[in-house]
Amino acid sequence: MIAAAILAIALVGGARSEEPAAVEAAPAQGDDVMARAQSLYDAGLGSYETFDYATAITKWTEAYRMLPRTPETAASRNSLVYNIARAQERAFEQDGDVARLSVAISLLQRYIEDAEATATDPEAAASDIAEARTRIGELQVRMDEAKAAQKPKSEPAQTDRGRKPGSGLIGAGATLLVLGAGTLAGGIAAGASMASKAEGELPGLDSLGDETRRQQVLREGHRGDALVIGAAVAGGVVAVTGIVLVAVGAKRRRSASRRSAWLPMPTRHGGALTWTMHF
Image (cartoon, rainbow, N blue to C red; front, side, top):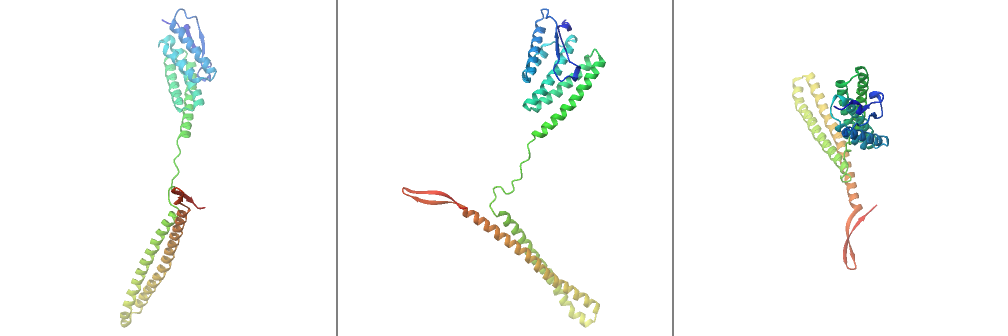
């Protein structure tokens, strides 16, 4: 059986400590395993204090694996778990690897589970466990923020990239032209139909002497005439606007195509192609 005095690792101030666990070691008493574990811890502590957190993690993890899982070493193993979690957090501050925060959270959860199961001083353990839980919450927030910061931003919509100059104007103009032509044709057809129907009904009403119906039909005829005029004006304006936009877009496209071109150029020994640009 390994005595607890061989390697006693205790947190300074419990889980509240921002620094690694302190070490108190008795003579190894011929126990080579405990001597090597103590040596690894000391080496990791030196790395931690000189900001080499990755090496400290490696050394302390080796020491943890070396310690047998016994009631006498439970406190030492659990303190090493806390120290490794702290070193992972510090390493994240150096290299920004979000996975380190996830590992630190998992280690603190292990620390809490083992502390609850092996605590010899329940009151002191309760305080340390509460502080560890608080730290887990803080680390979770840091991890979420780091992940959000590292999330790739969506690419901007490539609306005009690769499109020929004037394409937008030509497209908009064509749309307006179709809309104007539709308005013109549909409105004139509907208005003309209304006017024609009224005109055909009026003679019969005169012979019947139905003045009320006659006035109603006259109003329908007037509405038909107004619809023809309105459709002609509105549709014409929209169509003309479309024509103008198409013309402007086409002009821009022609202008752009004239700015650069491959042109043949004769030389003393034959010919060559040259890229010509106009500004």
